[in-house]
Amino acid sequence: MLKISPKFVSAVQNAKSLAELFPMLQNAIELEHSTIPPYLTALFSFKANTESDIRKVIHSIVIEEMLHMTIAANILNAVGGCPAISRPDFVPNYPTHLPMGIGGSLIVGIEKYSLDVVHNVFMEIEEPENPIEFKTMALAATEATYKTIGDFYRALQAKIAELAPDELPGNPAKQVTSSFFSSDLLYPILTKTDAINAINVIVEQGEGSEVSPLGTDDELAHYYKFEELYKGRELVRDPNAPNGYSFTGPVIPFDPSNVLPLYPNTKAEMLPEGSEERRLLDSFNQTYSNLLFGLHQTFNGHPDNLNNTIGLMFDLRLACQKLAEMPFPGQDGYTIGPSYEFVQPTTQL
Image 1: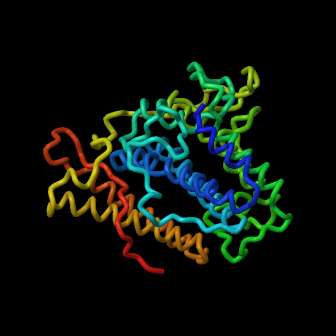
Image 2: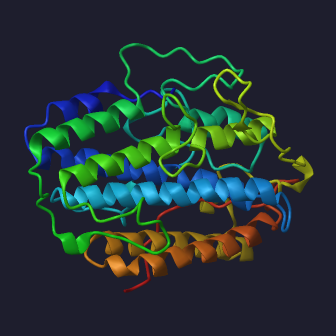
């Protein structure tokens, strides 16, 4: 399981007011966002019209991470805080540790899709505290002094239940909803019960429950979706298996030759000034920064802007696909990866 610095859980547990939870909920937003660039890069690294089964799985996880980020922002708004999205320190400098010291020695980079990345990074990010034993790999030892992401979210639930009034103090007009997401999953956070239930959505979609690999939406949790990709088989109900499921479903094919050779952890400064390659990467980073600006505006009083902001994801995909097909200057055998570097946004509401 991923480890989290215990000071963050302690900070939640020791909070005496809702205002003291503001930075912790901001950290939650940053954590949910930090997984999106690595997952998107893996998704965008396939050659056109290949690996459709794998694409569908990763795409579904990216969408749910966006949902979790939105839920965390809604909760922060509901308790009276203000999400901060459009700023340089919001963006991880990949390769990096995850926010709040999560993952211990785990380094998360920007890399092409591979089974090693799925197993050693993505499954590590999403691994629950007690994975259900359809898996065969041994669990990594975790020092007792560390906490888990689940501990962090459960501490937030308990503290909101303790400190918050039944009707939360935030401005309801800042709550974000969208037809892009089911109203059972993304809804206005108006009461502390709403906040507690919304945190359950985040945890169970990522980890499942202790008795089922399914989340609150009856879909496989992220950890088990990635495990399907790693094992190359769908996880299906199996009454003869000890835990009711087994990796005996349809094969999920994967041909490594369908993955473009993206240079890992590309940075704009690696490309020649004035070159077409640099121009395109700068354009990608501009679109990414505009996306963050749009999300900042969405979460700070303009909730109707969400669908337009999500539309920038398609622009990112097109730019990344162009980069991924361009030879990397001076790096034989590699193409250019995205870099997700913050620049001053140019978009306006």
